[in-house]
Amino acid sequence: MNQRVASFMELVKARNSHEPEFLQAVQEVAETVLDYIAEQDIYNGKNILLRMVEPERAISFRVSWVDDQGEIQVNRGYRIQMNSAIGPYKGGLRFHPSVNMSILKFLAFEQVFKNSLTTLPMGGGKGGSDFDPKGKSDAEIMRFCHNFMAELSRHIGPHTDIPAGDIGVGAREIGFLFGMYKKIKNEFTGVLTGKGLSWGGSLIRPEATGYGTVYFAESMLQTKNESMEGKSVVISGSGNVAQYAAEKVLHLGGKVLTLSDSSGYIYDKDGVDAEKLAFVMDLKNNKRGRISEYVEKYSSAEFFEGETPWGVACDVALPCATQNELSGEDAEKLLGNGCICVAEGANMPCMPEAVHKFHEAKILFAPGKASNAGGVATSGLEMSQNSLRISWTREEVDNKLKDIMKNIHDNCVAYGTEDGYTNYVKGANIAGFVKVADAMLAQGVV
Ligand code: NDP
Ligand code: 2IT
Image 1 (tube, rainbow, N blue to C red):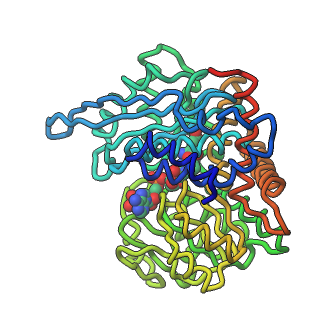
Image 2 (image 1 turned 90 degrees about the vertical axis):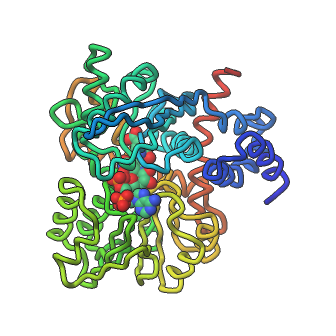
């Protein structure tokens, strides 16, 4: 770590010492952006990054609700409004027992850079709860969402802060959240994205994060005169992002070897084809089952309990489950098996040691804030359609998504290439920083 980064991190650690994920996300940005700032007269001496690591507002609130047995349950709700320099706060809501300030601040911080990269006018935010949706009835989910929104509604709005989904928050939850917001405010507005098609949602939003990640990987492969066609692909997760990443890999002629959840991974030597993927989507989205059930249906597959899929030989790896799910050792296994491209569908799934190893080996590596930006970008397109009170076709939205992902890719190459190798982490961080920093400078010390 150079002296500039060390001194900066000392300040950030003093204030956030109990937030390891947040410190991890900040350090990665500091390592790539501070030297750039020092070289630019307009940014130097303005403490811009120090201002960017402090949330504009961090809200924590009680959510009480009644379970199916009539017991009163208490959870903690949050919304981190990180940065609004270039637009209203925008970012997902996560419902998972691991949710705390550290995790939401890391996600909100990454979101600021990601949203800036999309080229759309969105600031960064993130929220959620330590509520665990697993095993809950639809009625319990509804009561929790309604009580969560009863408080959150005071802090958000279509021109202030527009939440969306993330882990544990999908179409069902967005519906319940929207219903309560509308009742409280007596307004039908685009206050959430990821809405159903008949009440303001956008075509392609469910697909967008996974599709966008694969579009980004395809752009990276093209720089090496390669493509997804014929590649074997290892994917982690089996939720929203993983499902549609797998679908796009299939569209582009690749072979999907694995999927996973928090219980383990399945390896299908014949590949997860379109029919098997439809089974997974029904299993996870409607039946809310476990990925291990895949092997009961398909004998070509094996289930590895409690393991992650990174030891399976592949050309391309797409971590699409959660943060810190791919270690330095896992990176070594991937490299040893000849993997040439890793694109993060999840947020910060690769640990710093893994990223370091990918860079050392000079393979293609895309950080989530670039490669998974298609989800929030399409949320931005949903907001535009809501404001215009029109709906674009599937093809129109998909083409805009492709253009945005290409633009992000090219911007990373422009800012991150040195001696013929593109460091996409550096490229994404600097490109994301510049737009937000310029807006903050123009708006003065606020
Ligand atoms: P889902 O809730 O739909 O799916 C999450 C998947 O990841 C599930 O398979 C889940 O398994 C697995 N998972 C979650 N936590 C863990 C854990 N601690 N260890 C192992 N596996 C885990 O979420 P999404 O697909 O929407 O989100 C996945 C990732 O993508 C997250 O990092 C999210 O922040 C990121 N992302 C999401 C976007 C979106 O639009 N939805 C946009 C950009 C990024 P299980 O069911 O067992 O918990
Ligand atoms: O991490 C993310 O970018 C998301 N969960 C999507 C956020 C959004 O507002 O669509």
